Length: 596
Image (cartoon, rainbow, N blue to C red; front, side, top):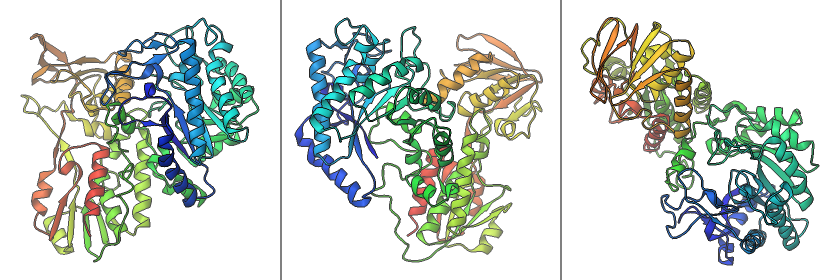
């Protein structure tokens, strides 16, 4: 286990909520954690990742220290960031001492190892990369000089903590920036022997930085799994120390495959253990089908990037970051619970209610579990969402939930069932705005298109530029349709995760999809959509098919029909208010926990 992102100096923090180890006063708190881990699991080794943001510290970000400026090897700013202070030679030497002193505190606190964060364009990484290091003193100007800062840190730690105290390092295998000079897999292979000679006991490979063209550090769903495995294999050719693989290794099977192929010596996981902290135990028990697999949606990192450091969440694991209050207590009285709707909210509510000890039955009018998860998995590269349905199916069976598919909830059937608790998770339907001509035969529901039950012509106009509209456009554009997206708001992709939106937007541009924002639809005709653009110009958009993706509305008819049929009635998911996967699962979880 590695405690991540612990800053060695106040100049390297991202704000008031970041973790520091630049003073001995922090040792007791760190010792408390190390002791807790060791007492709970004596075989588990635990370390601390020592870190400094360097040039990638945003002084204007939420909770940042406004009086501070970023520091770096060279005065090269990132994006909309601040030009960093170029560290003097003496200041670099002092920063080496800061890393070493931090490692000494880690050892004193009872940890088994320390990891130096040397990846993702942060301070140590920015020294190693010719993209961000333009120095001419002993800490720049050549590969050997660029890696000197990292090597001096490692040698200093070994000198102070002893040769037997393991020093691990995370490095970039590729910067992925738009520049001729940068870290590439070949450059990383040239760096690695210097780090090994300095005393690094393990290297593992990540990639990317804030300036990167690809988000290789916390890769979203559209980056291939085990993205860095081949770079790891390259490093293994030039060093004798263990090489680790990280990022998009989300299952025991994939981890074993990488090890069996000799591409890496060990596997690092972060998001998969957020999605399911019991992943190692389930693998050890031979029950991989019970693992709640990370779907790489990057909701977690997106919330962090928006500055809500205390509010980050996992889409598929509502207990993440709230384990201290999320434990399950058995119910004092068994209740007869009926859940209507087997989407994410309904399945999670049923799972938790059964886990608490209630007698739970789940009705779903369709012939398969999942609700809109089945549609969410249709757009390009989104198939991993299906793993969530698999997880719920196994969990519902394990918890003894009685699942009845093809079972519609009516007032008569629910009345006959006579539940003590009724949880309505009946979902939503597409909102059809009051546009003249919307009843035309050429108009289709985006959900029907994704489900394959509605065919489309060659020229398609999609009304609505939210996630559903854009991903439907991506799917149809890849199939060769000429697609135009019309959005009333000034921008498309509202509420989408940034990494996902950036990818889908790039794909739409690649396939020539026209996007009209601040544009009002006046009417739909048999062969066109008449609009008024944000500039006040009227346009007639040719359309064989018009797809409605203008949002959702709760299935209130089901709510109204079933009200009053149980002493306790709850609404969850889209039938309460249209929401995303994360909010649906979190709502279902919360309602399940209310049933004591």
